[in-house]
Length: 307
Image (cartoon, rainbow, N blue to C red):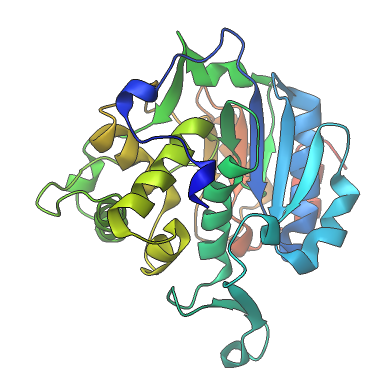
C-alpha cells in the first residue's frame, strides 16, 4: 500500500492550484440510505464547486446505493479501499443485528470505526485535490460553494482551540492521545485542540502523507495501526498530523462550523425543529440530525419543504 503515498515532509506541501478540484465524501450504510438520498438531493440543489461526490459503503450495500449514482456521484466499495485481511461478519453477540469487522491485526471494529477508515482510505482512490467530508444525516438548506474550504493555496482545517482542556471532553482526550500515538508523537506532548465536526475539508495529498508516516513509524499497514485502538477519531488523527507534524503547512484554521448538528437527545418536535433551523449561525448552511436519535426522515423532508 505504501506506493500510493507521498513523502511525509512539510516541504512537499505545495500550494493548491488556483481552482482546485473538490470532492464531497460520505460514508454510509443501508439503514441510512433514505437519509443519504436526501443529502444527495440537497447537495444537487444547493452545492456548487463540487467535482464529484463519493459514497463509501460496505460491499453488501453497494447495489442499494448504486441508485444514487450519476455523472458526478459514484459509490465506492470498501473492498476497493481497505485491506482484504479485514473481514466483516454478522455479530452473534447482537443477535445478528449488527456487523463486526475482524482481523488478526486490529481490535474488533464496528461500523462507525470502519466508516472512519474508509474516509482516510478514499485519499488513495480519489483524484481531487480537496476532500470535503459530509455525513449522510446532513441536509443542506442554503447555497454553499466548496470554495469556502480553500484560500491562497491552502485548505481550511477545522480546529477549536483549547477545548479539550475543559471539563466534559474525556473521550475526545482519549481520541487525541490515540491520534498522537498513531502518528508517532511523544505522549508527553498532548494537544488541547478539537478537530471533530461534519462538513470539513482535508487535502488529499496530506492524508496520503499521513498514512505514509503512520506506516513508517510503526512498520506496518496504517489500517492495522489505527484499528489497534478502538477509541479513535479520523478527524483527530488528521488534525494532529497537520498541526503537530506539518506545523500547519498547506492549511489555514477556522473554528466556525458550517453545519449545525443535533448531536444527541430526543427527536425534535416540529416547532423545535423550526427553531433549530431558525437559529442557525450566518455561516451555517446545513443541519445534521444524528441518525441514531431516530428523527423520522419523512418529517425532515416535510419541514424543509421537499415532501
